[in-house]
Image (cartoon, rainbow, N blue to C red; front, side):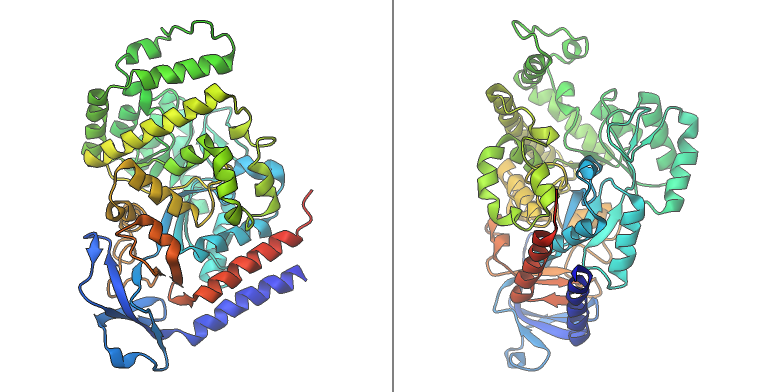
Length: 483
């Protein structure tokens, strides 16, 4: 019965595709994400199969004709990208989710106009299956660029990772992963210095994307100079921005009465916040800009963790659409990120959020290219789909304008992935991935929540289609007998 239910959903979207391979989305205001403003006047967007055929000045007499959808003067913008996702997060494998449950998560991205994602770690065989089935129209989901397994040190942090203990193995490992179908390399926190630098050297020698965590043994400036394409989560950045950087690395920190590992962790990290030096930070950010080292701050991930108790109640409307295994993992009883909610630790996390907001804006002003990413997966309340709205709101909270924030989820991902000739903005010949909002997101980024339509490779999802999709996903998860 579950398989029949799933097939009926897929067939309904295939039928919609067949009915609307050529149509006009008329009477819309086009958001130019490159220039950060609206196109002048109302427009009619002609769609043929999965492409934008052309964009014309609006002709009022088109309304009411067959094959013409009235956009009602609403605001049309390119499909969004979430550039840090884990729909198959190895951290959550302990919860034993089924592949079908993971499949269904992908539909949540589409429901909120997220038509492309960067899958930052997981089972490569499953990711390749997703890409093939989405392309064949057998599975509803976004465009996926996948890393496959994490590349970590000899004793990896997470299941499914490739542990590397010899830099001579680097070319063999990288070549085999590329042959298996990865789109980029994802490096992780426990990599030894020599292997991290060897990975960067080899990846750049063959012009293959390499991104990920800055390992604990490497400085962010060293990572940028080594040629990392994108750094994630602002990791290891605070020590290099400290006025007492040498004391930190030499472990010359006064812990006072702090005796436990947790208490010392709090003292050590508050020390970094208290000694943050904007001038040192600016020097580092200029280095990033010089090397065009991209950054995915995942601000909403940090925020949701720090303010979990308040955010959980706020997010109940979205949590209901998640599988039971993820709902359970997002609770303090199970989640590694929520195991201790001691008041002083929670306050530290809130202080870190404030500093990360400040740093993100300073990087932006220094010319560091930014990407929007949520870290959806194991991290609590980082939702597939709607989570990217939260991330863009945090970008604006940091100081970016709504137009600047939108770039981090539209044209910037396309430029980073080298697909900006076909994605990232609304132009003739580009792929017809877009969303229509009733209110202007350039005026208020929260207006993304007024989403009315989604176009996914030319396939139109009306507001009713979106609601049905969400309900179908919820109904499937509700009937799963999870123990």
